[in-house]
Amino acid sequence: MQVVVDKINALNDDLKSKQDKKAKLTEDVELCTVKLDRAQKLISGLGGEKVRWTAAAAQLALDYDALTAGAYTRPLLDST
Image (tube, rainbow, N blue to C red; front, side, top):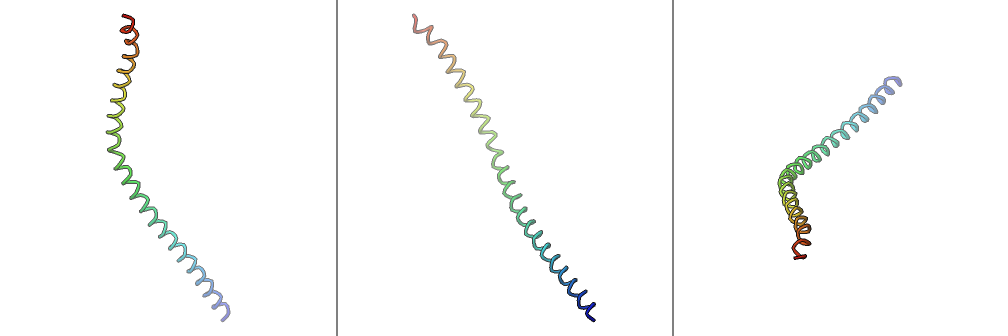
């Protein structure tokens, strides 16, 4: 009879262990789902930033060209 009781206790311990593992994995899945949703929102938001940064970079290149052209031509104009 004790053998059967020991076997039942071992099975109950194993069941508890498996249930705890299942609960942990379920929690991990929920956390990963939240993180994935946040990452997708971030990526979507950054998609518009590419357009804005590309335009800003183009404008900065034009400003730089105008600035350097002015720096090179100013000494020529001032010497007259």
